[in-house]
Image 1 (cartoon, rainbow over the protein chains, first blue to last red):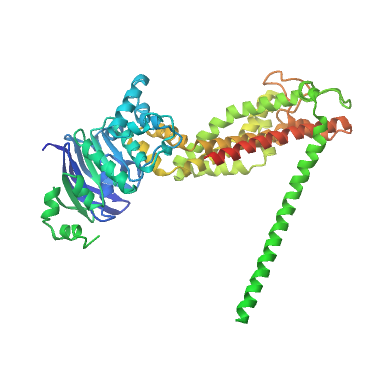
Image 2: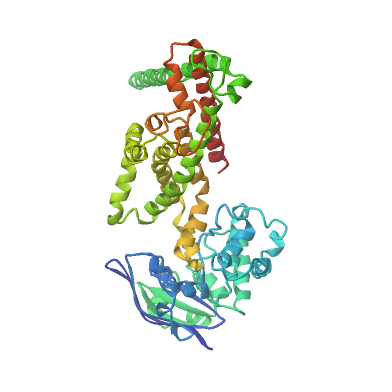
Length: 250
Length: 280
């Protein structure tokens, strides 16, 4: 399988505290890679290093390389990087005071990526891909915040897809949702992997086992083990991985 | 057992006493407000008729004429002040939100606080020195400038506060879409805070509509219609100030009428803010 993202010797600090230690990871193209590990182990920090979100935090320092198709994102334009590597957050955050349509269109609009006439098509396509079109096609002018939380999360996924990214980063995208919405999003993620490379951070191990092709186990800022998901859960090589997946550490 | 009961009784007495005291204080606090409203409405309503709205002031001491030029003047002054003050205020607010915590902008945030607390008559003196004096004339633009200076810190502070209330996750979501920083602040963050920012603007407009002190030494007042931004102009507050000191009952009545009008405007603007706050 082709590698889409290669992380090389990645270290992240917040002020003087080191959070990520020498991470090396090859994320395969058009597959779902799950990053699991206990709270505070650095999963989200690792994810945010991939699309340069740490740039916003003055105290954060990132060292190492993140290669997207062989090109270091830290040597590229950060705005272009974030358009190529989309992100979905834990809590769905539709932009308040914007309609459903505007929520999906805003990224394309503010990046001057398409003319007005094309926006409608882009919005429809993105909402279809996010499996939300049928539910909202008649209420596109209603505020995005009027949707249920599960729909809001699919709306933020549509918003990200509108920019036609190559990679989707998902930071515990279902942890704020009810089981039914969670199932819908999981199905959606599985469908999306035909077109996208997906990295999902989750602390729900069953979710990782259900949907991902590869799993990385993180502990204390280090990648302890990376393997095909079925292999990692069946035959963990490290003792600490086994302890985590059998629930002896959390 | 007995001691618990007596403790309970004691608490009840304390509660009742505190409740009575708080109620009494509230009544004392709102008596002046209601008596002002009562007096203004009682005296002001008599002055209101069609002439009051469409005629220029008549000769002093005679009951003919209206206050149309003061209404026109207040509208022009507030509009001009808003055109100058709102953009500067909002942009200052954005600056304070984005860079307010950094050391280099402490001076700016301190200045805004100071300007906020500055007595408005001082603003009037300042504009007198830098605009009226060099131009050798009281003028509409000087009045508008003085009002804009009163407006700016109010809008800047409410804008900053409203922006701070927008969850950082919203700004982050915008950044994650590859949106450039300044576009993200204006179209995502400011847009999310727009009801708060709008409330601040309406509050500032209400405040300057009722300002007198900054106008005394800048726009001066006039008995004619507006005749150019380099000429003096009348306003409701200046008219009240001048007419209320006249010995003629007809002038005093017009002052009450103008006060009634201002009261209605303030009430209307406040209602807009209140309803806006609720619909959020």
